[in-house]
Image (cartoon, chains in turn purple, blue):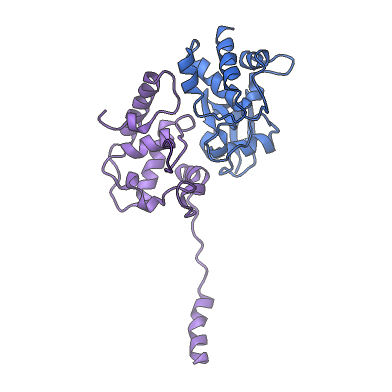
Length: 150
Length: 151
């Protein structure tokens, strides 16, 4: 038996190690730096973010929700435990955000690419700026106020 | 791979990996210690700097996200001898207790005045909402921002 098991291991031992190609696109580098710390370590909410595979924002029909969350974050709910996320409206350009969203969709879902990412990013940005102005100069626009169709 | 970006008007090639938070690169590589490490989660605002004039949490912003952009830190607003308008206003109002949150408060207030030179007190409160102060310096901070807006 030992000889048999040992013989099975030979193949594994001699199999050449397959180097994983490093994804060096700008979106992947931004993901590794900004998102991975919270989203890839399985910590419970609110200490960690949801695993990308389970995010409805990524698999949804419209990219608008994902754009809202990345731009404006998720503010803490008053008086109860809730997911929180900082927004990246100040740091990301529209191009960077659109790239990141397309990359997330391709990497974590089986859904086809969104046809209108760049357009939805521009709309989300505009709505957020509008919301900020309406709430008198606030910088942390609430996604609930900039949801699609409002 | 290095990351090129402009900090306080000077171009730098940063050697840190590009998944390094901007805050760490500013403090450890450039010795700009104005921005502070508070929560590390983008929830307290002590690390706030300006990226292209917008207030940004530098602790959650990797270098990959700011490559080629213009960053302004507290040090970029003025010097001890010649403080900027916002710094001068905070000094005038003695708007600091422990002082840890103040660099972030000043940067977010600066971003506000650049976008809206004459905010009312409600606008100032809403703009500073992402920044926390645990000492209770809020009233002095509000007076300082109002003073800077009049300066």
